[in-house]
Image 1 (cartoon, rainbow over the protein chains, first blue to last red):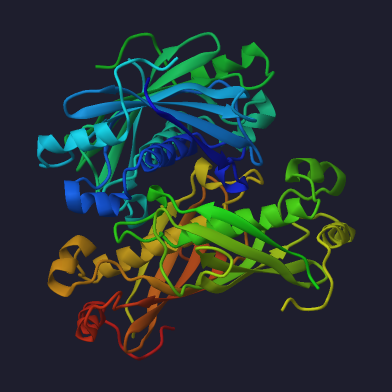
Image 2: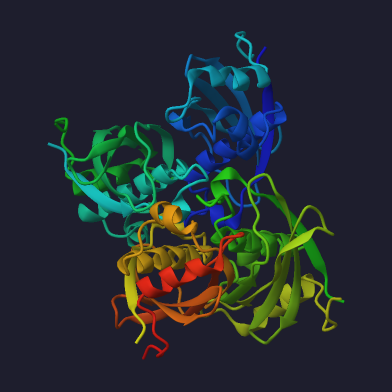
Length: 143
Length: 143
Length: 143
Length: 143
């Protein structure tokens, strides 16, 4: 089973737009933060340290998609449940489920995912396995 | 042919992350701004005015997806080319192509799209046609 | 003694700029969030509810200032210590001290303050005392 | 006379909060962008190039302050008028005036300023004059 990690974020006043709901690019901001916390929880050091041993400073997104089922507003606490769905040779797919009001709460984003490049720029292809190993990925899908 | 509109944005220092490239949620921020400019260019009044006649204050996103082909960094000028791809009964799909360095420039986001709800909340279903009519939508695809 | 409240925020990758430190407008973002948490901790309901009884939807800033002593970067946990320094007839002054690494940690922002209008728009002047009473303000300075 | 530069920004939907006005940290975001445009207009190359000759990658803020006189909302076009008010040995003070509706328009921020460090980190003190010379600074105040 793939490791997964839950990160918590509070929706702030300034995250909401004149319609009083979350301005949706902020959901991607929280997913990005959740990705980093996933790696940190898995034992990957901060990018600034990881860079010196691996040449990797962040993992640029190749594509992203999300579905928004319910709005969220300031004061809401969001749980972002993050897992790695797939490792490919040079990239990996992360998925996120965003809930409001606890881990059994209503799904705000029932599904979101992003594929990231594990070898940005001209970095050598052999570095990805570090992220793979550390993140405890296995090929069995999460329930 | 569907109307389309090009909006221009400059990537700022603060839009970039420690890897010196655009922090990707900002691309969705620019797409959202481009959507509003598309409607404004089509003759739709600002949401605050449109609300009083239609009950619509913004069009909440139902889903979003984007592919990122090339990075962009501060100082880059981005052209976001926006069109409406499809009108459905209660929602519509907008697509964006983001280029760097002019309308014939390199594609940063070769494809991005979002489906928005045209009837947020409990607003009556008959209001969508206003947006349709004003945006000059026709069923022929854009080239 | 005036009530004070400590809010905690984690600096995310996307909060940092190409120099790898916090893009400074984000400090004001956290101060704004800390202001709202201060009021919530004092018993003031969310603005959306408070509006219906008081006509007040947020308290627009009149001026703001901050000093930045040390940088912060992604992964840092910031404590924002917020208090109300002064109530005037139609506005109030809030101050914030931002530390890194716990309540006895190094000061990132040794001093920051903002004066807010408690009567935005044409709202009646008698509504401010609600915020005053609820926030437990007294004229004695904090240590 | 000190050189000054006017940068233009459009307030977007996502820059506004549930009270339908600009979420104020965004004003600092625009001031930061205006600072960089000021330097670019003065002939300073992008930071990524300037760094290689000067060791300077951005000029971290030491303090910032602003007064907010009028609100702005989405659709407003803001003119940010930027000048250098003072050069000190290791820092400089920039000031901004933000107007709405053209260079003779109403002042949204009648006064804002920030002092920045021209020698971040352990960079040598002799590099600042480059920024001074290029920015065309003279000790006479702007009108």
